[in-house]
Figure: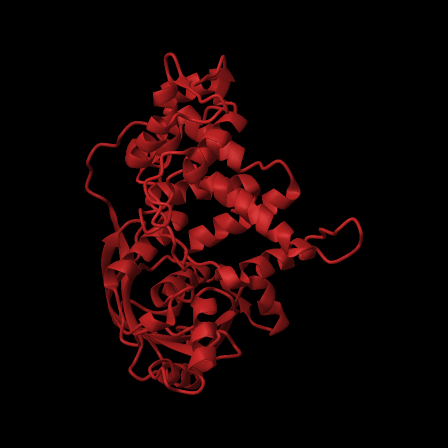
Length: 431
């Protein structure tokens, strides 16, 4: 195994350093009731980083171009567009070279507001106003306050969003079914849970916390490492010594299946507390992967530690690096593409609904040049198969906050899970 020693020793308690920050009130024009957030941001943020903070704070999905209209300190107009490749097409200034303190003067002697526009089709104009300045902990973006849920992506601007909200509020409306179906596909949420006034400050700050970890990476702590590797380490620990006796058909004994389900909290709401591997797919999946990864092997009717498994059990940092390398270097290009998609969806906190997921994967395969040998269109089964393969691989790790297994939306990553996937993305060349 390659040694990166990413976790390292626990760091001593220290007082975090602070950096100059701006306190901004950001409201979406034309919304009623008004949708707004108040953010405390380091004044050295670049415009693309500011854009990412806006996306998190309002629940946007970063599907469209964005731009900023402002005046410089001499009163001259500036138009800034991102991503950079789009700026040239509209004869605008590229976003990546601009820093937040250029756009707003925290001392109050220069510009005190500017406009941020997202999605030039729907025209979501965010008014950004300086409330004050101060200090914030280094490497953090914080939401101080806000009101109302963010608009729904691609809902047609403020007018279209108001119309959607009216329809979803009335189950007897003739357009309700179509609107509810579309809403669930776009957001991954149940239409019955839609609430214009919903605003969860803690949830927004969790999203901003994950963004902060992406913008200012931090080492993996031993606790985060152990939590992510817990399913694998549990199995390795219980296989140490004499190993685990298998049934004559090569399955785990029912008692071990039950212990694993109890320890890892993998009981299925539908299947219940089954104690056979065929009824406990997560346990079966984990065992087969550990064999495939050569962490375990079979010997004389028992499951025993392989040499790599012994190293991983003794050196969790080595096991972390091995798993990053294994998941970040799939066996073929189709799995590599799917791993890239799955990691991106988890890191960003949203994914296509399951009704659209196969279509998105098929489109990505076709765009990457994958073809059926017969020359016919790629069958949907291909998308389903590679999606299942990658999901089963990631399910061997504890990357997300414990939650009901059957969720319409993407599960929430832990900090350790985020750090793991960021390393996978770096290996895939995505960061």
